[in-house]
Image (cartoon, rainbow, N blue to C red; front, top):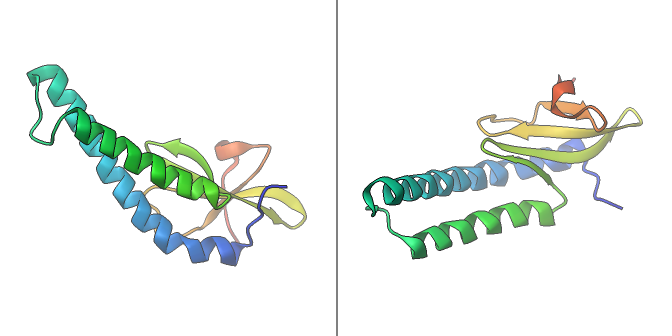
Length: 120
């Protein structure tokens, strides 16, 4: 059975998630810049293939860390994470998206992001 999070458990993880997501966003931006510069100019001041591989490994480590905790990674750009939970007997996902400072949203599991509602 997949891990279920209480609201308190999910919220307790949020400070580290926000910190890790900042690292992921920086790595994602560096990867995009290196790839663009190499395509258009043949080289990048941020590096080449070794740096791209290192950034890719960093991102995979962060995404894998979240998945290893039972958090569902739903998006990469922007970062979108779901925490499986149950509210009032209904299967839901506590939902966090890059840029939010609090865990304040959920959606029914069967509805996905389009069914997002504020937590009471």
